[in-house]
Length: 498
Image 1 (cartoon, rainbow, N blue to C red):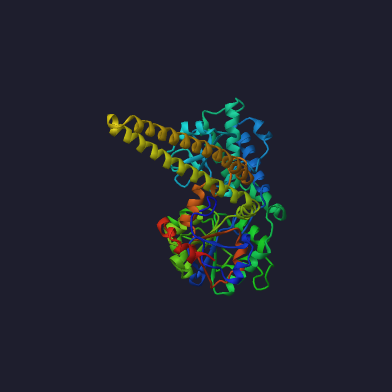
Image 2: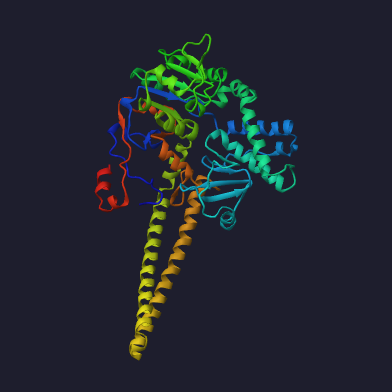
């Protein structure tokens, strides 16, 4: 299997209509999603219904947080001179606040790439700190970069680590920086200044998607109950969704007309773990602040797998709604469109990577066979010893020399192939991100982010508007799961091939 292919089989053949969709408009099912069985469809707002313009929104958060650190925490004005770098980090990374490091983990939670501050760590430096052990990101000082809101946080923290190392900032340690940056980013989002600026410049920060109203309207006409479940408070929610949806459909003049239930200030993931009372919003029918999952299910008369929730947060939206409420989940991955374009642009290089890796493994297998033959040769020499005639001894020695030379030649060839593979792989990965490579993969391994996506999401797509492309009563088929011994015979592969 191509090291760059997903670690699962292809889905059964798409319908003719689905097959004509551009890759960026498709819903990618990880397990079969029977839309006809869904009674209620829920949506997060930030980075789900509302796709904020990036990197402009990130630059705003970065600057607001830096000003707070200077004004409220007494940090050097040097922070205000730093420009935000949108290419610095990707989603799925992990901050190590104790050591000032940013980490990329594979699906086994092992560190595969790392940086200290803004500087990349060598493999020797990385393994000296983390080795090959599995990291627990729940431990003190670790923070997962799970949402797009957290990308500016990672860059600001890295810059402050650089500042502390260079003597430009004063702090007790990296952990203090970590906590102060966390406070600043949270405060920037909660104190109202940033939200006020977004609402003042809605056309700039919140681009409209004409497919959004069509997708919601199609679901409503199919008899689905729609609900909004967001951590944002009412004023901001009303401003954002009014901008996106008001007047887009004559059947739904106000954005609230699309939804059977609106829940703001939901406090996810606590919404799925606790049972606070839902407070009605005066003057706004069907709109509430707070509440909990069981109350929502009772209100909408839909439970467990009858509910599909659409969100962008792997933990707050997808994992908790899946594990604690048994809802079906559709994860929004706004980065997917760019990822798909790069995969298409680099298709020839990816095929060459597969050819090189196949050739390298074949060379290593041949070298291993020769090494085994050499071991058997030396074993015969050791066992027979004095009983061998001079000619037999010479023959064994000659054979051993030939085997050793051939094995060494193959090892050298594999090294050359490995260097060629590494060079091309590094060049390809740098097109996704110069430091971290693709979000879903590192060389031939899935990342922790991709593993969580596979584990907890029923499906994923790039934007909510893509739901407009699908019949609300259809079934979106997932991959046929298999084990290597089942694929060896080719039967399951042939069954799943479009």
